[in-house]
Each structure stands twice: as structure tokens, then as C-alpha cells.
Amino acid sequence: MSTQNSDTTIKSLLILGASGDLTQRLLLPGLASLLATGKVDQLHVKGVGTPDVSAEEFSKRVAKAFAESLAATASDVARSAGHKVLSETQAAASYETADVTAPGELGKLVSSVPGPVAVFFALPPAVTEKALVAAAPEDLPEGTVLVLEKPFGSNLEAAKALNQKLTRLVPEQNIHRVDHFLGKSTVLNILGLRFANRFLEPLMTADHVESVHLIYDEELALEGRAGYYDKAGALRDMIQSHLLQIMALIAIDPPATLGERDLRDKISEVLRATKIAGPPAENTRRARYSAGTSLDRSIVGYAEEEGVDPARNTETLAEVTFNINNARWNHVPFVLRSGKAMGRVRKEAIVTFKPVSHLPTGFTGCDFPTKLRIGFGPDTLALEIDVNGPGDPFHLDRMTLSAKLNQAGMLPYGEVLLGVLSGEPTLSVRADAAEECWRIVEPVLAAWEANEVPLEEYPAGSEGPTDWVTFEDANFAGTTKPLTEGVSA
Image (cartoon, rainbow, N blue to C red):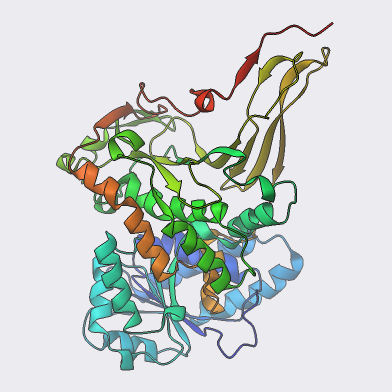
């Protein structure tokens, strides 16, 4: 997708909160990785932040991110084109101190750079909302794009209110609610796998699938993010946003096209059909880490982390079972799980298929369920199947067929920014989808707030509470069958 030679191409990126961690750690490197590909023209970047960062310091941050990205560009053609764009963009970058919550200030900032302008709110949610309220529709020229990082509200009511504030200023198609999990390569890898393979597409239904698990367990602990994380927790931070969106992509019916309306309509259909599988006490689990060791470092217990209020009972490990109530997926459990300070990194979707209707008598070994694993970061694919083992052709052994999926050649934020700069909202979260994700988890949030589900503990560096039975421990509800019969004569 190229943004060149288009009347709607974004000419300027206005970063509000440019002095913050998000801009330095993710946004500038992501932008640099996009520019280094040579896929976009020179961009005017203007940072807006606090006096804590000077224009000189911001310029150094831009230079550092751009230099590192150029060095990582492998292709000679892309390197040549990318070097020119990076150099031009870096030279034009600027920085200004401003209070974006003051009336009329956003309009002044937008008018200070060439248009059309994309305004990236790299700000705390409360500050973003104040800035939106302070702005007037007439402050923003036609073609202005507003870009927000999750969370999109803190509950269903707040999400609706946020959407109203946004659409008061610009039309919905000019709003990009970005989710770096929905980077283009990840999305298209899932869609290509689902719909371009005759052997697989007909099998992705309740008739053939036993369960679907989406897991995002990471070794990292709080890492100084108490200000945000202690008010969010694993459910809001990961399941409510990223994992529900990936679940919808895995579960959608085939769209007519990959255009933004067709694809996002299908995503919203899945989310509207999704709800918790039953009572929260039976279909959700939560826990937080205690002191332990992760990444060869001693980790204090979450309740003792600086900036944490133990009385909040914030979970660092959450697991929820959902059902998608439609003809394709009725009664198939979709289990979404995410945890911090875990002993094993697991970032994958696992589709477990039902056993065959009849296995001829005479096989020995174990009849394991067929499993399709889709890994996220790096994007990988693995198909676990039963095959005849060596030596004894009647003994079933396990084999894994694996492959690395194609990468985008840029960082996730670069992929998302490509859609922003080209006016292509396919990879952004639409208003109705953002609201549905909150609607889906609200019963869980209410039950946890009422302490209907106990908050358990697990040592940092472990795989969770010792009494949690995982889907692998349970052998997928008994679908693994030991075959003890001898070979028929």
C-alpha cells in the first residue's frame, strides 16, 4: 500500500505527548521503520510535549530512531529510497511546548503544519479526552485524521462517550483507533490461512473444532508501568482489546473483499455474537504474581511494586472462556488468557480439532488431537498431526509441520502508521467494535469487583497458580486417547 501521489495523503504527523515514553519507545521507531522502506513520501513530523524535553532533545530522539531503522534495512533499493525520506523527514522535524487541553490550542497546532494532518494522541486517556473537549469542529480542517492508542474508554459507557467526542470533530472514517496487534502482516497471515486454503476453511466450524485458545503470556513483570497497569490489569490491558480482536479475525465468516467496510463488518458481527460462556465464577480465573524470579532477575510481588495499590486487587493473569453464538461457532469454547511475569513466553492461538469419527482398531500409541498453532511475534505456523511412527508402522507418533510466516519488514507501529498516512482504516478499530469489546467483558469486571471470583497468587517465573488445570493438562477434555490394543493379526 503506497501513499505516494495521492490527494488524500497525510502530509504531517502531529504527535501530542511527544515527550512521553510511548513516542520514544514505540512511535518514533515504528515511524522510522516505515519511512526506511521507501513506501511513503517525506513527512513533516511535529512533536508537542512538556518543557521537560527541549526541541534539541526531541531532535536527538528522532535522529537516533531514524539511524537505527536505516541500519536495519536490508534491501539496497529500499535503503536508497528510505535514506532520502528519512533524511528529509528528520530535517523537517520540529518540537513545541503547548497545553493541548486549552481551548483552540489543537486548531493552532494543526494549522502550523502542512495538511492534511494526522494527530496522534500519545497521551494519557484523561488528557486525550480533555483535549478533544477543548477542540471545536471548525478548528480542524477537512481531511484531518485523529489517531488514538488504546484503551478506548474504561467501560462501555466511557467508550460510547469517547466515540461521541471524536465524531463531534471528524467523521468516523477519519478516526484511527490503533492496535499494534493488528499489524498488517499478522492480519493478512490469519486471513490468508483461513480463506485461501481449501483443506482448512471448511474445517473452521463447530462441527470440527473442539476449542480455540488465545494465549499471551510474557516473562516481563510490571516494568515501572504501575501508573497505567494498576488501573487496568490483564483483563482490560490484553483480553478486552488485543485478544478479542484477534479472536474475531480467527472466527469471522469470509468477507466479500478485504476492503475496510467488508472486513470490519464481519469483525463486528463476531463481536456482537460473543459473550462469556456462563457464570463468571465458572468461566473466569484471575491471579497476581508474588515474589519470584523471572528473566534471571528477582521480582518483588506485584502488591509490593512501586506505585501499586494492593487494595485494587489488580490481576496480572486473567483467563476467560467465551462463546460465539452463531451457526459457525456455537458451543465452541474460546479461551483467552494473558499473564505477566510468567515462566514461559507463549504468544499464540491454538485451534484444537475434534477426534476423527472412527479410528480403525489396530493402531497403538496415542491418538492426539490435531492442533493448529498460529504464533504472534514472530509470526509462525505449526500443524501438529498423528503419523505412523518409525519401526512399527501401526504405532502413532506425533509430528509437527512448521513454518515461519511472512513478515512486513517494519515494526508493528510502522504497519499501523502506513494505514493512517494513506487514509486506509482497515487495520484500525471501528467505533462499534470498540464498544462491543467493553460490552463483552463488563459481566466479568462486575463479578470480579464483587469478589465473586477469588484473586489467586502465583510465584513470578512460574506457569500460574499450582491448582490451575490448563487445557493441555486436561488433554482437551479427554480427546487424547491411549491406544492399548495390539495390532490385529
